[in-house]
Image 1 (tube, rainbow, N blue to C red):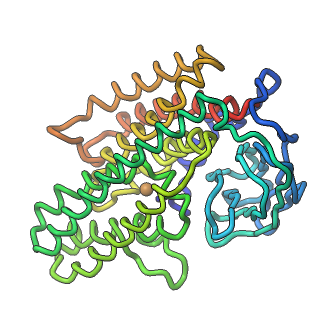
Image 2: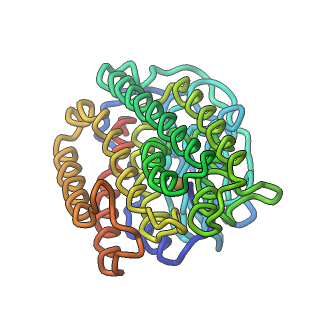
Image 3: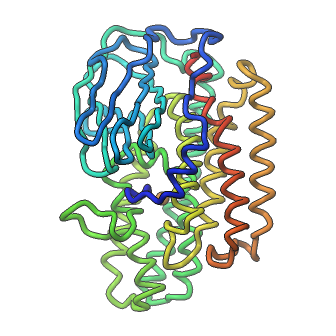
Length: 379
Ligand SMILES: [Cu+2]
């Protein structure tokens, strides 16, 4: 779950990552048609000026410039607030690109100054038709492979969440504590897919204090607090049941969803943003300090999306694939130093220097990954 509260550290980390995903356009092989020029979005604390309210079908690039004083986010929603693409953590003064693949229909764009609420919405209409990116055999295979990965991870997520919930209901706190980071691993690996279904993610993974007005603190982190802080799970049964119901709902939706190859690429990048904003800081699992499990899972999930895209990427930019392999290996090696038994050291067992090393690794990995969406879209 993303935190709307933004630490200076996070803004600084975001600033070190090159921001344009498709700055080096011109050598794309034009797999998709209907590719129009970039649509600029001027985002301020009170306005969201989208330069065009319509586009031809195909891949569409939005360039979002944050001209406000608050950190902002930008979303493209299909009906029902299904997330077609998002960029978050756009610090004041920065500009980010978002590439989305859209078929004909009506959509909404949203800027979210302060990263909260439903945002400042505008209608966005897409017309005509374009060849889907998945008509490229390698990209089609990539989405099939990745959906298979989602299926395996969601299967394990249900299984481990059920065990976690049962341990809580049986009053077995030690068992529940051991299962907490394990169940979360499967969640964190596929979080970008989960986030497509807007309202379920905060219910399952929201942190205390990040709820919208009127929204209850529920999900994994509520149970984490019961286990580690309140140390009383005698009344946690209904909350645990609710978690399992929500997880089941999101799993059903995730397995129904058809993803665009650009969503895989964006997801690989978002997972690293998750690491930078939530795990390095220890905000995610603030009561259990099991953040390194989530860290590892986010990196693994990112790697799985890149692995699915690999044959397509090798054809487009073999050197980038080599760089990605090296950076993933380097990040894994840095993380490996903090292994403990079957799992990981606790966040509060790591020094500031250890965390800095991990943060630098993630930034170095995020840089080449930010180029993948542009390559996939042929921009
Ligand atoms: Cu999360």
